[in-house]
Amino acid sequence: MERLPLDSNQVEQGLAKLVLTIIELLRQLMERQAMKRVESDSLTDEQIEELGLTLMRLEEKMEELKQIFGLEHEDLNIELGPLGKLL
Image (cartoon, rainbow, N blue to C red):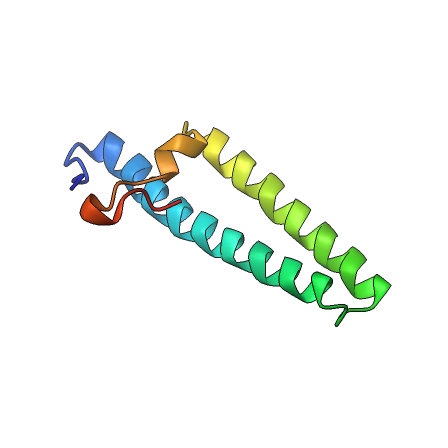
């Protein structure tokens, strides 16, 4: 299990890593749910367009935040022991 460092300069990055990992997990879950709804034809064309734009903006914001905190996508894929990788 990875521990957050006690160095005040590294605490911010460790916390950002944890928060962005949770956000990325939720983003991926939302994306999967959206795809199920699109495939089930339960959305109008306008709703599909808005959903696509929303997911694109969220992904762009995630990339921006990862860059701000000096993180890569692999940094968010934390090890869960016997369960394997999170993402």
